[in-house]
Image 1: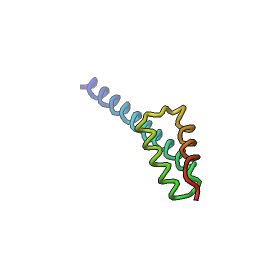
Image 2: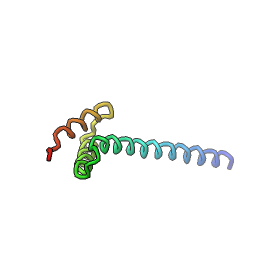
Image 3: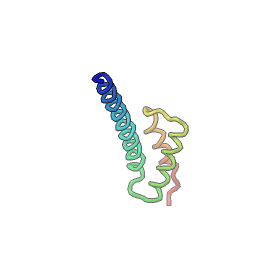
Image 4: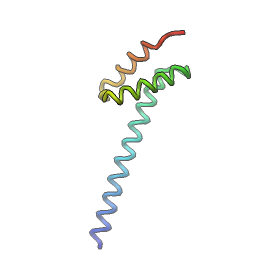
Length: 78
């Protein structure tokens, strides 16, 4: 029974750490995209769409900032 408790506690801890890592990674990527919108609500929606597109295309983290910056530069100016 002791091994079972240790196994459940260990697996729960590993799952929680994985879950929080994924959440923080999503928050960081979202903040990066929104920071490039410069407070414009229409551009924020555009950048969030581009972030979703980057995730669909599986853009790597090292390339994400440049990819989003290129998308922000292509945003039509008003």
